[in-house]
Length: 55
Image (cartoon, rainbow, N blue to C red; front, side, top):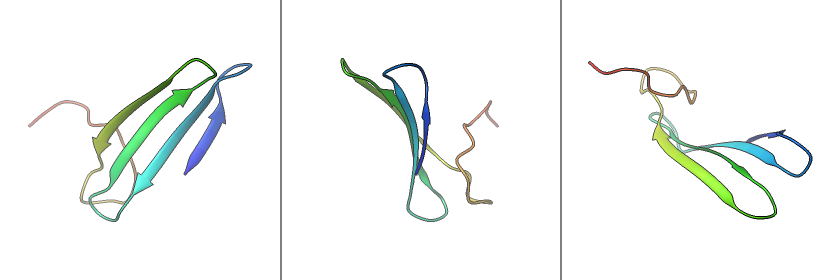
């Protein structure tokens, strides 16, 4: 899990779940709400690169 501060009261996060292929959860949370995007990692390496484009 990675976290970073995105402002005074907001925290960003990235959660990697499982092994190849990964389930990746990326988002932000603050006192008012939480936003999360889920996407799959690429099966050929163990990181959460956002998909860009298609085949």
